[in-house]
Length: 243
Image (cartoon, rainbow, N blue to C red; front, side):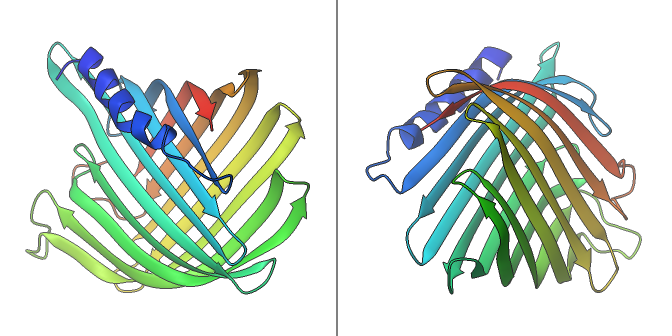
């Protein structure tokens, strides 16, 4: 697979979702851009992303699907796929119960795959208009990861109960620009491996539903697999289409 094929596959996968919405309570955004990474990989990649939100009076459902890919001299140097789904049952306007699942496959992380399932309580502690809000949530669940190599204890898996803390802050700087901060930490209750992720982004409308987005993402593992860095960073500039 070369770079052009990676872009084409990303576009083909995203397109059906972008045209599938039938009701006003479906919203989404597709993203395609350049990604610069440091840590376990230091290359320029293609970044593709699809985000979906479906919201009615008592339920809010969100999904995020992300892929990063690059190659140099016909050799793959970065390849990552992530899917995260969450459903919220709203007790009232601000309080909700959440159920979340995630799956990540990153060839250069030291893991064959990483997966979690969590549930808990969330609160929309602040809102302003239709585009600005702050969500905070706390809960617990389970982590199941498969290592690429057997660890020091002779096991090729990591599985443990976890506690999850998360926040999401959206702030409309103007009618055409949005600041967004996401932060989460998942704390292992057995071997105390803590995974913390942060994404800071700024997007500004270009024309119609098309926007430019700049983002900085950090993922930190307190106890990464042997031979892997404990911190990965991603800096990206991309085009975003909202629907």
